Image 1 (cartoon, rainbow, N blue to C red):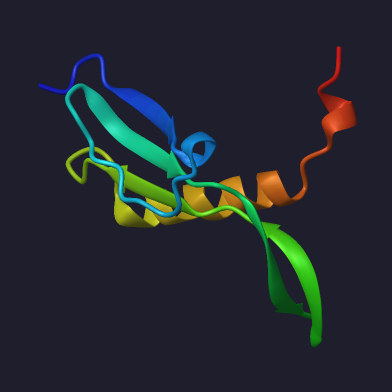
Image 2: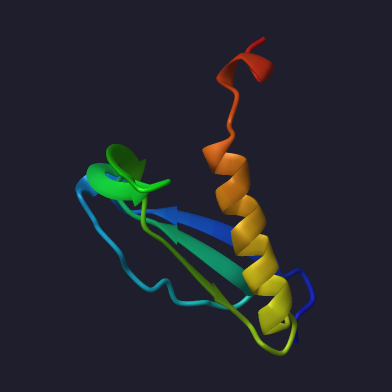
Length: 91
């Protein structure tokens, strides 16, 4: 039933979409929904600063992926995005 399962990324940010809940469709195992990034005021280390925030929503098939694994994936993805080094990927 799950043979050939996939992971999908859906980006509605390009059309102005904000936060949304993506729906897993067969044969997907998980889908990551990305909204439009925007500058927001946040408190960091006790100071208010402007940061770019991007809403993300992860939906997954619980028959295949444990909730703890999905949560760790999300945390790791956020860290990777926050520490992205564009110079490291240029050809």
